[in-house]
Length: 316
Image 1 (cartoon, one colour):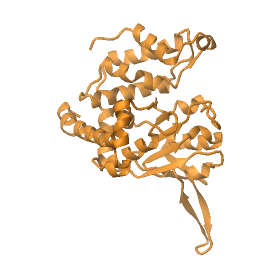
Image 2: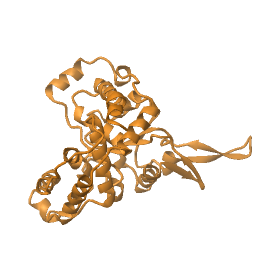
Image 3: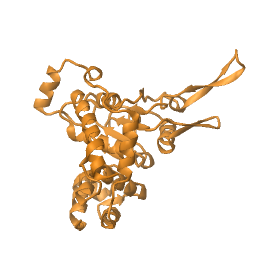
Image 4: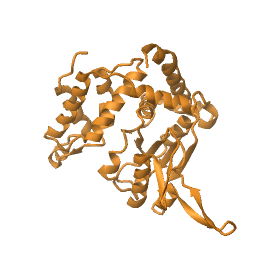
């Protein structure tokens, strides 16, 4: 895709989506942009935050702005894998089994409080996220495209929560935290009389989202950018404070998000600033600090900042 096509079609549509979502989610512009980057990179999003900060509102607003069919499931300990993937039931009148769709059969699936449910149900969702399809009784059904999962989890330590395994965390292209709104934003929330559903209008069609994803795939990355990304990944594996470094899947995710960031900045080529912009959000949830680093009070963001400052940035 040429830079002119990016400027005349992709950027206006992207800005329209962002502006619509901002009507419902006030004061979280950076989070909104990064979620759209994840959508462009064909990834899934994990929102880690306390209840009541607008995670569900955000997902609903995106589904409406992008004209995507949306389903939400509250993950509790008694949710079964079949609730996610669907199941077959016997119809006495026809004498045949009929498939009943699960909650994940949609374009945008909000998995609320995913870390409250059983490992078995988490694994069923992981398969759907990875394969883009559900398999019930040997029959595979491909999900509509685009297929996006926005999962939320409450901070570890909340009642009834359990940590997601590293294999599942690795399937989310980014992990974001919304946090509390600032004072002015909270005042605007109090003054706002429209609900998220009333405030947001459809401004893009399914085909526009697919075009956005295809355009992100076509963004040019110089060999210096690929080497820069690979060097950063290698640095995470060699850092003394990190026990588990960035996996190859994480490196691919970093590359995809870099291209999406370049696209939404109005370019059809990537630069080192694009890598730095999304590095912490892509890598933070995939890395595990050593016990010594935790005991000395190190946090993952400070370690990531140390890595990004030490890896030489190429000149493009």
